[in-house]
Structure formats: C-alpha cells, structure tokens
Image 1: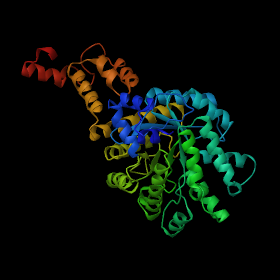
Image 2: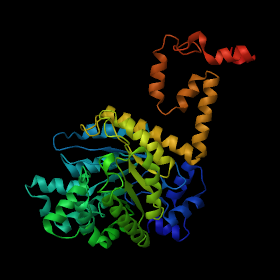
Image 3: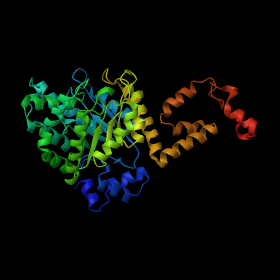
Image 4: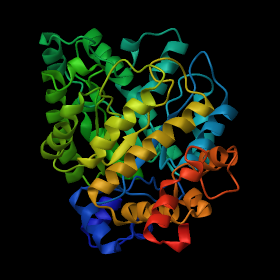
Length: 430
C-alpha cells in the first residue's frame, strides 16, 4: 500500500515516524495530514533513505535541480553537485539529465543520494527519440508510459508529469495574448506532440494508467505547471488558470486512487500577486502541497536570479507554498556549476526559513532566538552553528583584522552593544 492508503487505514508507517521526528510533531498528526492529502511523503518502495514530508504545517522544503545536457555531460560532476546540494541543505534533488548515458546517470544519482529524488520522465523519453533522429511527434504512448514505469522501478520518489497540457488548455493558450508562450520544457514538448498528432495528451486521457504505475511503487505525482508564466506579464492569465483547474481535478482523482500528489506552480509572478497565487492554488487544488519555482518577481536579474527567487520564495512560503525549487545564478543563462548549485540552495534555504517564521514553525523561531542571544553575547561559535551557511560565516569572520576580538571590523570600538553595555551597566558586554 502507499503511504496515503496506509494513513487512511489508520496505520502509522516508519516513514511517518521519521517525518514526525524531524518536524517535532506526533506521528498521529502526520498520519492524519497524509490521509487528508495535505502532506505527502515522497518515498519509493525501492529507494532506501530517511523520509521527508512536504505539506501543511511542516517546514518548507527545498529541491535542487541537477543534470546533464547534450553538450555537457559528466556523471562525476553531477554527483558532486548532488553532494554540494545536500551539504548546503537541500531536502530533495531532481535529475533533469538530457545528455550522456541517461539510464546510468539516473541509477548513479539514486544510489548516491541520501534524500528523495525526482525526475521529469518526458525529458529522457524525448532525448532518446532525438538521439534516434526521430521527432517529438513520433513518440508513442507506450514509450511515454514505459519510461515512467522504468524510472518508478528504478526508485524515483516523485515525478513531474505534464497532465494539464490538454487540447482544451492549448485552445485557451492560442486565444491568449501571452508574451512568451510556453516556457516549460516538458510542457512545450507535450504541446507539440498534441498539436502534431492532433490527439489528446496520453497522460491526461489515460491518467488511470499513470495512477496504476504511481500506486504500485508509491511514487508521488508532481502535477507539472506546463503553462506557468515565463514573464511577470503573463502571470495568472487564462492559460495558467485553466491548467490549474485541470490539475485540481486530477489531484482529486489521484487521491481517490490512493496516490500521493502535489501541484507545481509558477514561475514569474509580480510581487503583489504571489500571496494570492498561493492561496488560489490551495483552494482550487483541495489543499494539495504546492511546489513552486521561485517565484521570480522581476525578469531583469540575469546572473542574480537566485536572489530574485529567494525574495519571491519567502513570500510564497509565508503564504502556503510547501516546497521551493531552487533557482541558481545560472538560471536563464547556462548549465549551473557546482558553485551555482550551492548558491542556489543557500538562497532558497533563506527563503524557506523566512517563510517558516511566518508560518509559525516553532523550530524556526527558536533558531533565530539562539542567533540573537549568541550575537548579544559575542558567542561566535554558536553563531556559526546556527546560521544557514556556517562555512561562509566562518570564512568572512576569520578574514577580519578583528577576528580575535569581540567586535566586528565595521564597528570596532564603537560597537553599539558595547556602548549600550557601558551606558546601561551591563558588565558582561562592556
């Protein structure tokens, strides 16, 4: 049985206990939320690792995308990115490889990973087709489903599937005045297949077949936002909303079938609309966990989009987003390097923590309290332990001319805390 089916039968699984321990909640609370569909535990029956939960009332989780391209594929480099991402605090990693020995890359990443692994199977399906000098439209339904089943058997924990790209959503898209059209790689491939074959999306039309595969291996479906906006000017247009409504219906079908499901979201969204987007998705999709890319509230920060995404991600998490897909400095520009991966994870961790403070997560508030107390006492050791990036904090501190004094170089002897201590008689900090 899946985690969802076990939960509905009143059974507390080992995975639920692991999630409860990490979240400092009771296992019964986790069971109830899994049973209700507001929390998912992406954990394939063929993948051994410590389970992590995503959803309502839990800490905001972070995903890091890694993977090769046809022009650059090095499995050792990708495993290095995986290690760096996990060390920096990623709760999940997605293998988005499209170049090299794709089967071997996926198997190596799953075997090497101590966290949950996700994929977008259509990438691998189309990559193989292109390698055979065939066209996207040549892909058969069986090839699509066979690849999903292969990856499920191999051990992936969650899978992005673009079931919401349908003949109807494409009709709505064609009538829209979008500036950038479809910016989702998987979404655009699925749309091309539908248009060229004049046929319905098999992932939508034969959704039950997808559910059977997911249920057998307890793979969590991540219903992809193929019509997410790629610019702030396209946010919340008819195409995006039409797809979201479709995904809401599909999410309920998945839950009815005992399959865990979450929903993917934008994308590029103006700052003032991010909170509303999060709340709209929760209403439309029955409280399913929300997995968002960014969101990015401006389009002009190329080279710094990890910062843009952190700004949007903090607002998103504070208003209900459960899972943030990181964005790196290389976004929109190039394949991310190992350093880019680390920067992206750290930026997303900051956003997630800010969101958790607003969600009232007790451990998040306790962490800030420890930092404030340590700063007040010039307890550098605790500051380094508590901060999100201890490595960088130590490096910056140790490069200071005042590294052996209880001051920072910026303030020196004019340290406000020491001035306060002298003025108010606080002997400890004078």
